[in-house]
Amino acid sequence: MLAKRAEPSVHNVHVPCKPGFFHKRCELLHMLPLVPILREIFDLFVWGNESECIALTDVLDCLRSMGMDPSQDWLLAKMEEFVYRERNPLAGGTMPKRVNFELVLTLYCCLASSPETNGTASREEMLKSLRLYDKGKSGKLAYAFLRKLLMTMGNDCLTESEVFHSLNSCSDPAGNVYYEKLVDQMFMRDMNAEEKLHQSKIYLQAVGRNAMDMDMSKRDDFIDALRHADPQKTGFIQPKRLLDLLNSSESQFSYDELDQLTKSMHDVAHKNLGIDYRRFLKFIMND
Image (cartoon, rainbow, N blue to C red; front, side, top):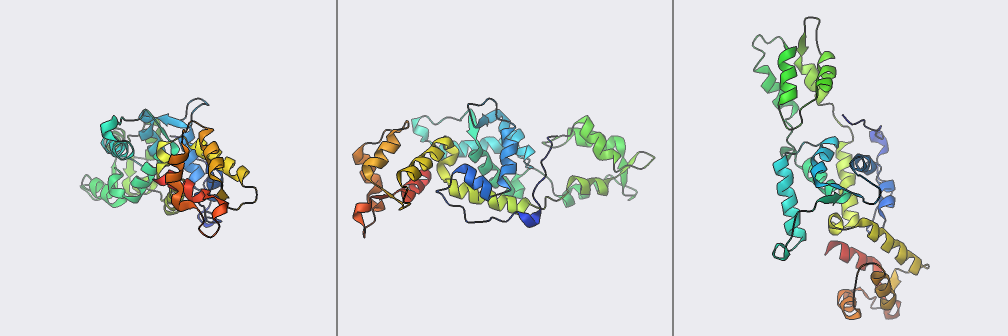
């Protein structure tokens, strides 16, 4: 099992200020103290220094390391849904081979918000199933039986070492296992689970819906460039300057295209101020 970093106390995980869509990722992670825990798990699956993405084949294990337990079929169906929504299927939309943190976090939120899709039986369901094998109602089951069960059942089977540590802590001298204690141990509540989901949703709302389908380092660079272009923090930028910033990367906007996109983003009362670049960023990250 992957070693988990110590999580902040449930009393110290509140959001210190309101994150917005004009914050860079590093700023959002600083404001949302539980999201970096998920980011660290994601980073364990990143190979090399040139990419901030992980292989599609590692997404299932990544989600399981985050405490979820989706099935392969659920993941493929969800990925196909994203591909269909984000890319025109008639234009040849294909499944990506690598995915970014924002897409994995979106999947995490889907699972955490809907326990019925998370592949993991509830504590009560597991106890009910085990009690069927406890004919004498002793509260104990054979070590060998539970060992086989834990190593062969479900989407996330335990290893020999994990089974040994789990069962030995709940066994009596005769080799029988107090299965209620075992289930309690397996279902130790993540006291930060609800807040972790809440902060993850805030993060995704701040970066925008299109975040899961783009190079997010370019978004951060664009925010830096906009801040540098507006040292007085007016919130506005002239169209020509905005066009230069956009086309300094791989984007190729014409003046007419930019004009069509930003017609509603000019301050009516102060026409000379230019384009409201915060509204522009929100638009391109969500449209």
